[in-house]
Image 1 (cartoon, rainbow, N blue to C red):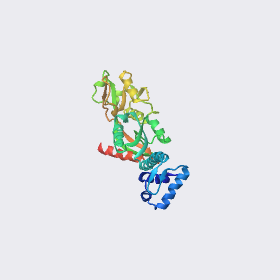
Image 2: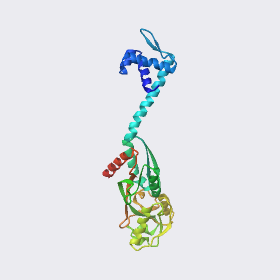
Image 3: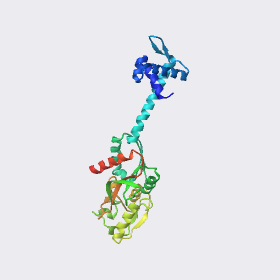
Image 4: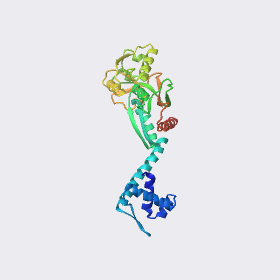
Length: 294
């Protein structure tokens, strides 16, 4: 008994006419009648009452019709879903992103992707950059928004935006009065920054910016998260150079200032170059639209 036999049965149950049901199934009546008889033998129950003029469903036939309709509907939906998943129109996509990207490109990327692929379930993972790299390598993320770096042959990347460093200090700090900060202003200051083991791109950018001007940076505190860095600056425990994208919603007691020749860095979408998830290529199409509209 398979779905083909169920369709034979449903055709007769809905038409109650052997000739019409056989025509619906593109068969002649004699082999169709034999199929119905074989179904009843297999089930060990009469599904139809027949005479020379009428065909009617038995109680068992009425029950079987409901069950067959449900099974066939589920089977047909599964067949459609296979095609949708294979085309990337349905399925699941695990997208990782670093915190500062949540303040810039991620909301627009997620919105645009959801509009074009409403049946793809997006699983969002906010992670630190080094975790993102590891999760991509291990296949625990399908794609991620993170800092750009040197080209990696195992990754496919697309530029989304560019960010730059900006100084944040408490409003009562002397540097809050400068129009534009320079490396010399950082001399002797307590810098708060994430360690290189968390975000090597930011840490290297800050260190190189200072060293290039002959300033030895003093990293006083090294929390992992940018939100924590901002809170520590608000408590007067030091100053920080953070991505500009994080400076749009600072507390009242904090101010941000541009810095001269601020280091810039790329924000990219990346995924494994060998990803087999059909939902990934459409994400890169959306990324291109997002970048072109910027």
